[in-house]
Image 1: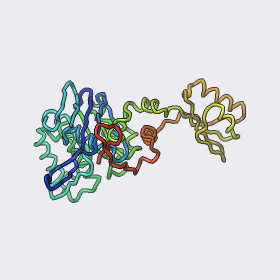
Image 2 (image 1 turned 60 degrees about the vertical axis):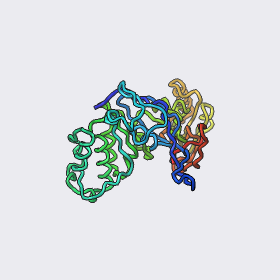
Image 3 (image 1 turned 90 degrees about the vertical axis):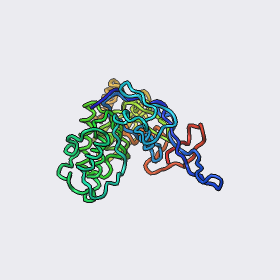
Image 4 (image 1 turned 180 degrees about the horizontal axis):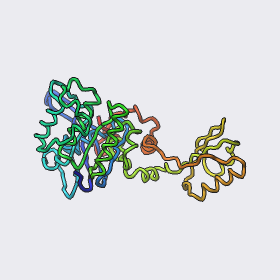
Length: 341
């Protein structure tokens, strides 16, 4: 298991939209898609693929695993270069893909399903059933499995052959909190063994607990990517300080040290300050000293790190990113207005 660095270079794809007419019932036109997607990931990293609805996350995963042929671009992994993943069998053996909402149904069983898939991939199942927690249900029918159990089966199917790259589309969907924690632990173990994992999810809290890097997508394009701390710094989200105390009303004093973003008082006080140049240790010590001299010594002071939702909002410039689907507009060769259908 494991591999080298993964590099995605200029992947582009546009959906074909049916536009039938009398002269050509099968006519299509170019629609929305993803544009010139490029990023580089070190071996063993867990990467969060984050973006609003319609940003192109699923389309990008389909390109990376070979379900769709890219219009242009390539991938490099472990000293190998791939341009046509759909037709490169050896390349696909290095990639495991877990799609969203697989409809496992019928009278077959998880054990039989994994055995058939292993034959197709020319690999062994090994202890995957035990690894994903389905050992006690391995011989039950697919129709009897819960949504969470079917998610576990999808994960096991993606892991057949110990691929060096694991692509997961909404893996936390349908899992109870205990199963979510178990999946997080499993992904961390896989990354320690060298597997490069890309996770697309709208459950940002669960995602943030495991990722060390992010790729932010918006309208089919990479807005920003990199390690979490680096992305926060680039977006100016590392400049906030959370400070709390139980005595006094330091509103005026705090305003002299930075922009007061949030402030509340009652049984004590709480404030969030922001400075363009960040918060050095010396500056924080000076702030605490001044508050102490004024009889308002704080009991808590810490740098406030932006979460993934705040990063996405800052990168896209949209305050409400959870349910919004942008209008499907696509102008050829224009960067803006590209999105996944």
